[in-house]
Image (cartoon, rainbow, N blue to C red; front, top):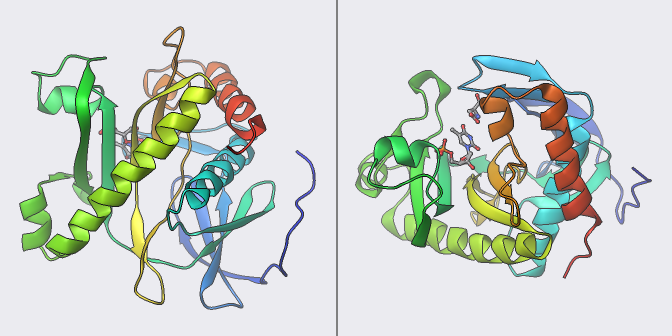
Length: 252
Ligand code: TMP
Ligand code: ASP
């Protein structure tokens, strides 16, 4: 996958601060920066289904790095600093907001179950933003905006800012992905606060957290293949296809 030309001295990797289902987060000797390592683990249904696909972490690190770079070029503040090796990115350290912010262009997945008036594959006349509490023990429950404000997870003005940035992320990603023949069905974002108190987009942007369909054939190119029980070889093929299209395309 080539060498990584870093423009700055990579901070020293110190202790593991957090291990998620698909990533490990390391503290560094620079208090405001973390190293995020993308694992080969793939999970679904709140971790009940688990497998390892060799090289998935490498594909996802590169896809995330590319998409964060495009967002930054479009003036969106993200935690991404640079990719430092094939499965690691250097990022701003954030205090994460415990929300999963989902944005949908096409009705699918949990939306259909929650609101059966929507038909699977139906194009939404405007993107829908939804919020879920990031809490595995509670099964990531749906939250209304009123719930979020009442629970003081964020203030109303902050929530509005999260929605504004999410719509902008959607516009930028949708346009870029369309250029490489991919329809952005929906995706999940996570935000946090940096040390200056600024709202920053964190986490990852990959086929683990986005629904991506081939624009011509409708073929699924994301983790839904795994959720639907397709063989791991098919899942890997789809992730490689995303890599080929997204990472090898020039940044516009
Ligand atoms: P949903 O239709 O299951 O609510 O998923 C919406 C989007 O969020 C989809 O692109 C997959 C992504 N997602 C995650 O990134 N993490 C999760 O835990 C879940 C349930 C969905
Ligand atoms: N992210 C969750 C898990 O890994 C659920 C999902 O993406 O389907 O278990």
